Image (tube, rainbow, N blue to C red; front, side):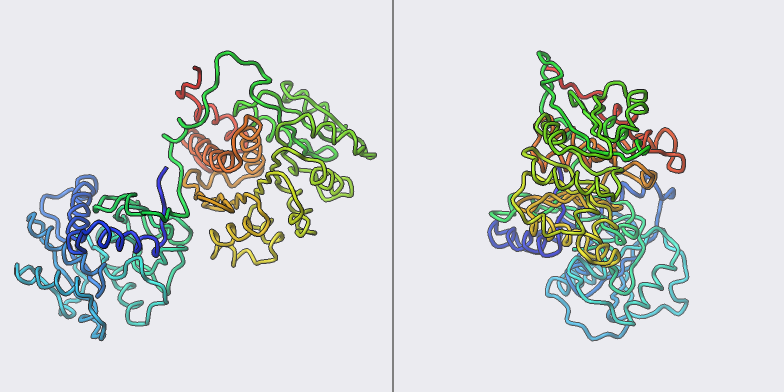
Length: 512
């Protein structure tokens, strides 16, 4: 697991390291610059195939610009010709310069390394092997003025590999929004922890490959204030509970899948099959009688319980009482019967419930019902469903992805898996997660049903809600990445994601 931080959280880390651990700001700056240069030299080996590359560093007036001067100095000391360009002088902008920035500039000038304080007669049309962006850092919170927007656009047109110091200039470090203009980078070398804005859309499209490097700030600098967001990694799968050798199908839980409508069995099959691929002991599908044959033929491992137009409340309550977890919603439609299914689950469930697809659209008609006492709920909306649940536009939600998911989770005391290019797993009372696994090939019908089945399977096996939601989302993304390796993104289907689940589990020994 790796923490992802906001700009404010990172500034707190800086302050704690200097104030509590007594590490001077200039020392941290030197360490950051050294690690940046080391990683940059690794990138050179992979991408710049010449012995004497030439570069330029655009330095702003704050601490990001101070890092830029230190980086330019260290590169020159390594024999890599590098020019430093002081952008406020270049633009004839009057700006307050930070103390650290002034000190680093003076150190740089004392070495008589090349510095640019005005436009070259030929402009910046010449080609550089690398261009380093040290103009604005993680503290940018207001739109850029016209002068800086023009400068960034000019830099975007300079030929050469572009590398950002900490974060590309123009990206809001908290939410990934573009503050008027943004420098499009091939690589971002960031310090200590990844920044949320580097991974959220649209900022992620401009950050290139993100490299997290050390600078002397560790988790110890959190003191009593832990971060609010993290992302899972493959190594974290080892923390899932072991699968005991002495076991039977009852050991691994029972999942009830309430899905499908008349002659619409596909969603139910996707949920059930994905759940089985994630180790659940038994899956029972509760669906319309018309779907019995196709489900039994396609997935004979599943138990099937059916209802007709005359839905019997006591039958569904008995099935809910049988289960260790419930998934409700995929393919049920918006009929009177579908609404009755949702009502009964809300009334009768005493086990964790995954709410998905049509169930979310039904709940959106009366979201206040979620304020009533309930068991553990995991909501899995895509942007359209979340828009209906919250009465906010899709565009607004995309621009406030993390905050809107967490606000919803806290308002209704639920876990919210808000599905987008980056899926947010919002925890109302603790650490939330941003899923970095997955790809655009997963934007296909049935993919969400697969996710619901994975989360339901983990719940049925006894996982806590937040663990089932976070690990389930991550496993779903990994399976999509394995499917992409086999067939690319254009031809990927939901069934390919299910089949690739075995690649996620392969090689992980769960037997005691």
